Image 1 (spheres, protein in one colour):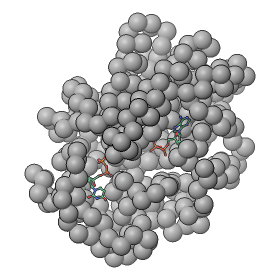
Image 2 (image 1 turned 180 degrees about the vertical axis):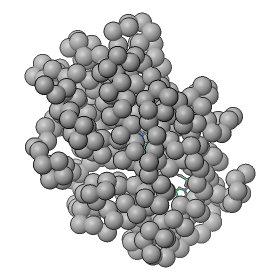
Image 3 (image 1 turned 60 degrees about the vertical axis):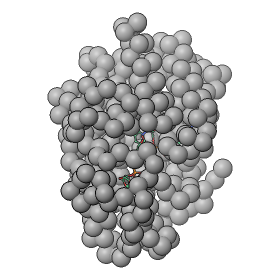
Image 4 (image 1 turned 90 degrees about the horizontal axis):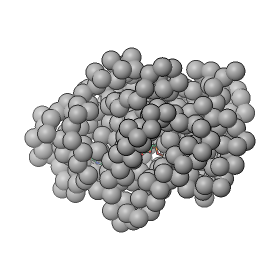
Length: 341
Ligand code: NAD
Ligand code: WQD
């Protein structure tokens, strides 16, 4: 019988792509999501895409009773935990909400898992745990530096999981530090669907290319980078989803805990992303240099070889493919569906 995976936050951007990858890999999957940052129509699109009904529990990861009920109803073999709040500037305005969902939510989930005897978890971490790193490409051994409450929640999450694994070796834990996820599914049926004006570069550029926003503000061109604009390691969301399948397979097999960066090891500047998106969309993307954004890091690039050694993970898709899939998603019929509360 197929192993049964609980995907918290499975209706979100990375979660929905990982859902498809897990179904394709033969797993049975249940999504838990409260839809606070996802559109309910994603469920029908996942059904159309996989040709299978989607099991969904609409619940908050902080709700111990509902979570406990779900674990009594199903025998989960492992959990992939995406559910979290992720907007950096919002975390500065509402830190307690971020601590509550991202840290209390994680602890609540771990308690329910422990009681049910399910002790395998893949955790969504982020390059943000490195703050402004001393070394680029940045290895997993770089120290933690919290830049904002959101970053603190990822550091705390990792520390809680690390201490848990050290205290009780029945736990198998995969910590994946994503660099900058971008792009959309090759079916063009799921993609990044920000509710408001996007905070992140690629969805913002997409809306400028589509004519929904007037221009891109480039946050600074005086960084110590080749063209002065910020450099990031963009990773295709389908590569990222595959990284989760490999992490899970390792935990379900005989491999123990792992902590890896998921990135390409290649950096691209803001202006390089704009140029790539212009090529993909064949649209003009007006841009203007403005002040640096507070709290921005000049360069984030992953040292990517540990994921290859430990999980056999290598990215396959280029920046051009991220831009092309993002554009196909944006101009397709599904990205503009009315968000639901
Ligand atoms: P997303 O907002 O699209 O997905 C998160 C999902 O979790 C959403 O569907 C949302 O409705 C759900 N959710 C939020 N709070 C919940 C709660 N209390 N209970 C149940 N469900 C809840 O975000 P994403 O980009 O897919 O990110 C997924 C994970 O990856 C997050 O943990 C995020 O911090 C992490 N991450 C994201 C990025 C990025 O740039 N997108 C980078 C590094 C790490
Ligand atoms: C990329 C580059 C900006 C928007 C954030 C979070 C991080 C992680 C991923 C979850 C930077 C520049 C952007 C714009 C711009 N999330 N930019 N104009 O800052 O690397 O990371 O998302 O874990 O925690 O901090 O991503 O896409 O916002 O920015 O010039 O309108 O694009 O300055 O150089 P970032 P981003």
